[in-house]
Length: 396
Ligand code: FEO
Image 1 (tube, rainbow, N blue to C red):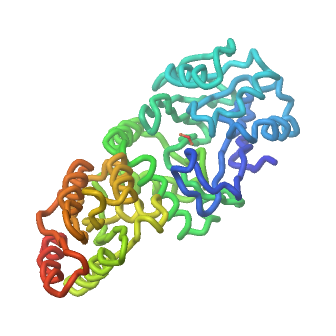
Image 2 (cartoon, helix red, strand yellow; image 1 turned 60 degrees about the vertical axis):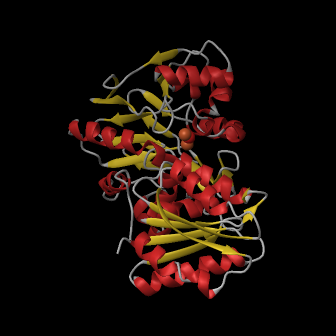
């Protein structure tokens, strides 16, 4: 069922209340999500994006209830990833001649996923535009690597709506559709999680793109992303927030993350957390067992942190696989401007701290030499290293 966005623009997407993971199982969904598609009915009828493949037949049936599909003058595919293009196959079977406006990379992406189907592509680049009647037009802005090479945004003049696709989105289901109607706590939590886990690796590209868009001197009445709430109340607030997040973001927070075999490394983790609070009561301290906590929620906390302490016992001359995989994920997210320290217990060979330090350095963290390396069960003598380690982590 359509939802009204502004004037002749409607939302025709899908709210997925039951979605539990995204990107396979790589991204946890805690509060549902949505795939937002939009229908513009000016003198020209335009569909902006579609929804994920499993819902393609429902999408087409629902769209048929709203309009005669033959009235669609053209489709804009802002991004080829299947959560936005997945219904194209079912739709194009019914209206095969309909032009699809998209970037050159998007043609590659769509043909790569769905095969060469003879679709009527109109390749566009930044600054290209198309008239849609009533004095309005759609202007295209390439958003390369935000977060795929093909990503694009579309700006509608007259109504001043930016269809931003993945940028400014959240994996968050909002029946009421708009940011001013959403639970503000969840909205911002999910917006930050989305940024930290999906967009952070492209922060440098994003910062440049925000400057480029600012140079266009456009007015933004609405920013309509392809996931989650639509920003209609002060839409620039999310743009400002992205500028902040793209600039080596950190808060006064330290996160302690570890895994353990027989609780020795846990004891060190807890003592480090206590010491952080003791030395700096205003610093937020978060503690996670890597094997038990949600990895995407943890990465959001790392994104907020100015420093982290990571622990693993030594196992088979190495570290626990849970911690190794977790650091690899952190490396992918390309965090900047964050200190890190290592700690862990061992029975005999005791390589874990050194390996953790190397891996954290390789993942882009500023690793301090201070560490806690305890033989068998940590003792008060082992804990003596913690105050200095924490003061160096805090930079005091
Ligand atoms: Fe929401 Fe990159 O797809």
